[in-house]
Image 1 (cartoon, helix red, strand yellow):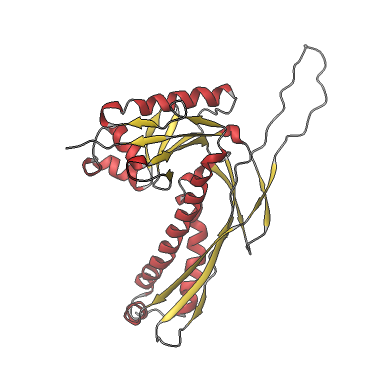
Image 2 (tube, one colour):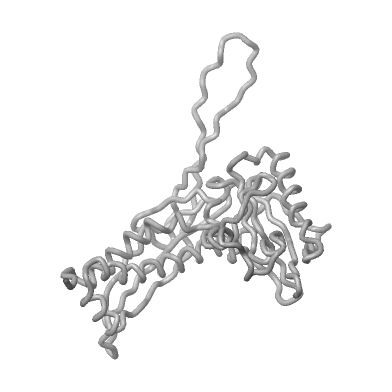
Amino acid sequence: MAQTYDLNQSIITSTAAQFEKRLENELVIGKLAKTELKSGAKMGDEVNVIMPAEVALTKWDGGDLSAPEKIKSGIVKVEINQGYVVNFELEKAKELQITSASNDVAAKLIDEYSSDAMYKAKDRVDAYLGGLYGLAGHVEDNSGSAISLTADTADKAFTILSNVKAKLSRFNAWKTGKMLAILPPEMISLMLGMSFNVYTEGQVKDRAIGELSQKVGFKILESNNVAITGSGVNTVYHPLFGVEGETFAAPLQKGLELVSYMRDESLNKAFKGAFVFGGNCPNSKKLATANVKVTLGSY
């Protein structure tokens, strides 16, 4: 039986609901952030992001306890200063396919649009946060130069992880079980010792969500939104290392609100909407980066 609901409203409602439901779960670099979903967010807003609380630890001599201190939670103000516009058209053939389908099939076809909008927004958030590598309190490099990784020196990647662990631990920024290493695909490839097209079935499944394994106490995540500077043989990658949910503060628009319209020169239905967000690193000691050049193995 063909679906009976209003197509325009169905796309608008589905996109808003699925966008909010999936956005946080799909972030990769954004896993380092304490996110704050905000309804009605707009450019220029300052949003209070409540960072994870810290409990005071004081010296005790065995006598009476001192008065308890309130748990400290850092409220960080972050400006929403990143905005993107979603604007797409529903071709007449696609519209007819949806309107002639059963309710369940129509819902799946409509969901294609909300999924694509969410994935594009996720990439924008991850890329922006990846670009904040310059705020890191710790930088791993080779005396000011980039560390060179090749197929023959891939073990240096594990040295990077070990050194970063030592530095974060020294500054009491290490939290066992919550440490993430966000690495570019090229670096992951060398660490696995294989080219991109020979992953096992299990590794292909891991790559689909950006997760590969755990090394040196870090949960390894792969992201093509790791910041890059330079080009060609001078390309330098800037992987990120930090505490899950505590390194960045990121207010995100809660849902993607679309408006339906029709262009004068087209009979197709069209939809547009804005997505805004912000991001910062309130505590640089919880963020580390590295300067890395990667040369993939030859055949």
